[in-house]
Figure 1 (tube, rainbow, N blue to C red):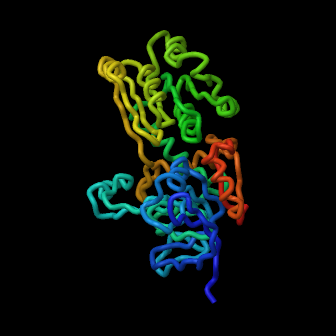
Figure 2 (figure 1 turned 180 degrees about the vertical axis):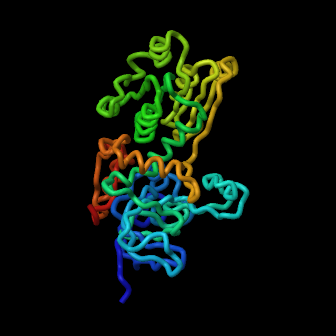
Figure 3 (figure 1 turned 90 degrees about the horizontal axis):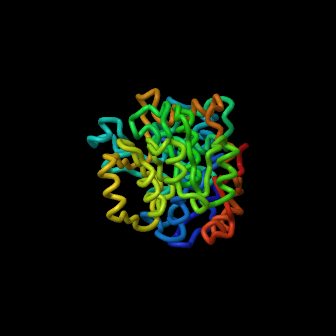
Length: 355
């Protein structure tokens, strides 16, 4: 008799069901991971309730941490019992981007949780090359934040400049925004300024050490940044909300020669008026896009390795961001509550099989 597992299966827009499925069998170069925790990404809510996935049915979820249960015949990197995180992007390995190790720009990629089954289940299949061992001492719930933490690190590294002695501004204090602020501080920013209109998020930012946390409705960000920098502006402005208002604030606060880094995933069109574009031109500011993070089996300091090392020495303390640990059987109600804005949340983790 085939062993069964529980999984949240998306059959269409808004049609998410808790179902029993057979436990999958890993191929020669694959591993079967028993999920510990899988984080809810900001992209999962619209995928489930608004846009749907690339195909249905599919198991969503891509911020994964768990324990290897079984390995394929050709896998030697990990063994059953190894605690791992899973890089969700499955690269082709043969396009020009892959040949340069830029897997996030792969021309023909797959993606666990949006193009193939992901982590809102008891088990997930992943390529052996996509797993990274979790350092001793890092709990599985903390490790489940590796993917968003690596994206935030990538946003900070994307500028290509040292933040030592500089001012960084972060617009939007959701999980990605706060993680970006943490990394900016870790990488040496003189000051990190966080803006968000939600009081609870500002309180959390302050608990995470971001003392310069402001509600933009109380005081215009441009006024705040000007006062803190003697009128110069922020060397780097990270837009982490994906809406027109915060993009405009970032453009208004950037210093001459500085960078506006777009890391927030927009749900609707973002429109820049003439004045905002003119200011970018006059400031000769760079506008940089961020998507995903660096993961390279040959690079010792890619975003994932750096993130796991920072979690291990607790220089990156992401635990305060976890607002919910939700059993799989209760996840449907919580996800709908988040979509309908009835359930305030920060980082939601789904799964309760492992601690």
